[in-house]
Image (cartoon, rainbow, N blue to C red; front, side):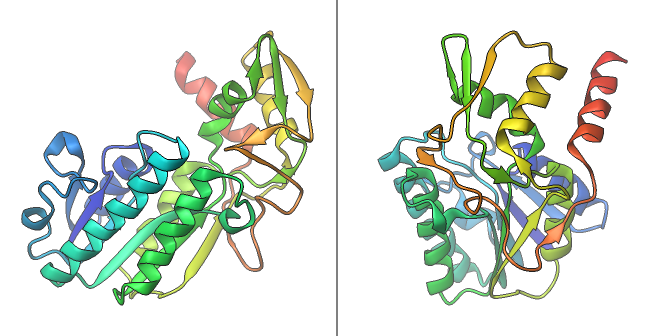
Length: 253
């Protein structure tokens, strides 16, 4: 079958493309660099000819509230319209666990808008909501930095290795549309503060970590129920400490 991965050169997209290719699918890694732009519509109709499945793992270049909403709404509408024209049989999209519980976040409001467009389109679909990736630790720390202090929420979350998210996607993509939303999360629930503490210690970062219940994540304050999965999520097996040690060993070898 022919599968087009929108955002196919990013962290999730590039790994997903490689995994799908190993199963002998015809896979197109689509991105603005390859002449396919879901936001403008450039190249979509030609690329989606004879396509069975479209996977959307693209992301907005700007996280400003209006810009990110515009990106996900326009990109999703362009994709769904082009897919209907091409006869695509399955639309798969990535989203974020807990997005509906944090309306203060412009980014997460935009992800909910994206989900609603997909559900209302009539296109057979599957939506995979993931918790935060291990790879985001540095980005989360930087977003919480003021001067030499890193302010991080003590709220619980359940981060996951991106490779395990890709493995779940690779199962969902060639299968029958689920026409629902499923969740994937890491094996261990922990305070975000402890997650960042481990990262700062392991990287010998001199910034001072501050546990701050008012610290913002994508513009929203968190509580222990904000970013954790609901009932029966798919769970990864890799623990953060083991993943981080493996990353350090790879960079040092």
